[in-house]
Length: 326
Image (tube, rainbow, N blue to C red):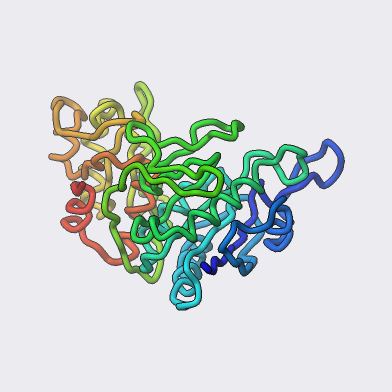
């Protein structure tokens, strides 16, 4: 018999309309979510529930998610607990799951799930996702694989997954790589093993890390504005292989003198950054000016990784090494 802890954090899965046809807000406790399972918990699984914070995931901040990761780690330290399921809003689920992948030290399964249709809808996808997530968290096959997202029966690695559709129930995808497995009628099937996880230990996350999506002809003075606001790090969602509009290399050099780190990722959903192009603000020129290439990390995941590394006191050499890894 496997024992799983369900940690409820709000989101659409825990939301209902405040009035007919009105907006939805997160209010349902974890026990209500568990009670909604039509056939109860999966066979061979017992569940205990705790409520962490009932918020839409768009309202979460880095200190709150850091506290959630610490709580997950504390729960998994109990030898009587075999895994954790976290119910969470889909807007930022991939971000919280990625931080859990980085910060939770236990090898026991950590499974995030939620819903795209709120709990008051007759065809809400929440109950099925919870049941499948419990099966995942109880499966020995997921031990040592890091945090995952379970949605619509698909299992995705936290580093690779992203939300791809604003409303559809099959919103989560892992571009270029695909899911690592699936749940079929309560049985967990794994098809591949994700890359070995990176584990970090930090007492806090540096929340002064900004993300800037680049577009045609944007001005590099935006870098200075962010530095003036107190940014310690900036992640650029740049073009193609990691190229930026004219003037950004000079802007990166100015920030280097101010001690602000700049990580360059690609805004493309697949592929890696690389020092292929020179000239004014090609990736090679950006690196020469002091930027760090972000490899195949998405800009969203790179921002959180940089936040964790800065919170842990890592210097530029260490940060460069991490982003250059597999």
